Structure formats: structure tokens, C-alpha cells
Image 1: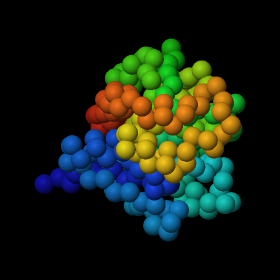
Image 2: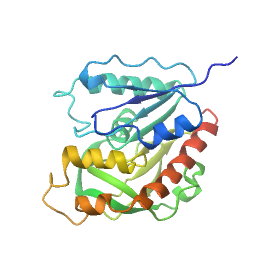
Image 3: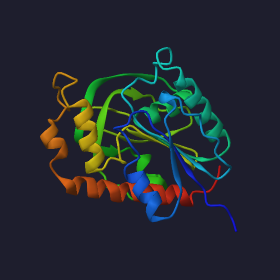
Image 4: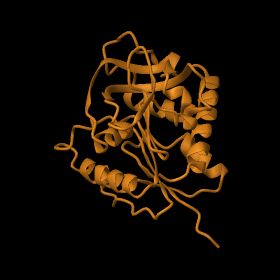
Amino acid sequence: MSRSPTIHVLQHDPAEGPGGVAEWAAARGIPLRAAHLYRGDAAPAPAADDWLVVLGGGMSANDGAAHPWLHAERALIRESVDAGRRVLGICLGSQLLAQVLGAGVTRNAETEIGWLPVRKTAEGRGVALFAGFADPAEVFHWHGDTFDTPPGAIRVAGSDGCANQAFVHGTRVVGVQFHPEMTQATARALVAAEGCGWVDGGRFVQPAAEVLRDEGRFGRMRGWLGSLLDALAAAPGG
């Protein structure tokens, strides 16, 4: 009997769990294992057909001096990309992935918190991995930094507040600045842990009540995440 692939998750904060990724995996009987390198967990050793999902966190991708475990994460991302595994980077995870692929990470001109639309680029409309996403798609944001699009990658989407919202590199590597994995429960945990007041307002910052108001938003986004993960699961190597 062939071994089922495992989804290895790198988590950076107890409040920012795998959410919709875990729901998708459970519905398909796919094992999911979370590692917390920031609190001393060993880095996972994925097998050939395993996945790597790198979640968000409050630290910057440039904070390696303060958080030396980020170097181990980048090494694991590099190894996974080189091995042809399926890799999904979300928020901080997308920034670490972009760095591994040769791009920079900087402070964005705007902070984005809450439900804001992303729109596909002309190239992004032809990317099969994102075919299940609406255009525009209202998605959940919680970030102040941004990545440059890596060399050789396709910039899939942007928003009014952040030009680089998603990229694909090859057929199995995806970075998204927004949070498609967020459920209403994980959003409540994030708001409880962080609040929405860690920035002084801003054009693209919503209050906590608005962030949590509509469960339907989470349901729609869960559907788009499922389409992305299904497409990744079917993606050929290369």
C-alpha cells in the first residue's frame, strides 16, 4: 500500500493555526503535522511527496537576528522547493518563500487588516492554480510587510493597498500575502491575541467587529482555498 503524503505545517504563533488547511486535509484523510520551531520543535524531515505549508506570524521575515530559527525555516523551504514538493507560503510564509527564491521583503506602504479585495493580474488570470478564485476575491488580510515577486515567478494578484498579493513559481510553489486559511475561529483567536489596534488606523485597517462580522466571508474564502489546494494536489512536478 502506498504511503499517504503528509502536510507539514510551520506555525509561528499559537493564535495563527492552519485553520482551513487543516479542515481540507481532514476531509481528505491527509495527515497534517504542525511544527513550532520558535518554541524549540525540531524542523520536520518531509518525505518525497509530502507538502510544506508555512503560516503567518507577527515577526518580520528580516528578523533572523532576533529569531534565529527563521534560518532553519528558510533552509527547509529551499530544500522543499529544490525537491519539487508542494509548497504553500501564507503571509510571513510567503515572504520567507520569496526570500528563498531571490526576492526582497520590505515594509509595505500600507498596513492591511480585514476583508479587502484582491484582483488578478493579466498573467494571473491564466494561472490554473487560481482558477477557482473569484476576480476580484474578498479575502482576509493581516500584514504590514510585503514581498517582491521572485525572479521567474508569476505575479498572480494585487490589491489597492499592496501590489504583490500572490505568486506562483513553477507548478507546485505558491505564495499568498493574504490569509486564505483563516476561519472565523482562528480570526477570533488572532483578534483576541493581537487586537486590531497595533497600528494607528489606516485606509486599509478595519475594526475587530468588522473583521469578525460575517461568517459567510469565511465560507466563501474556504471554498477558494479548497480549490487552490485541490489544484496543488493535482499539480504535476516541475
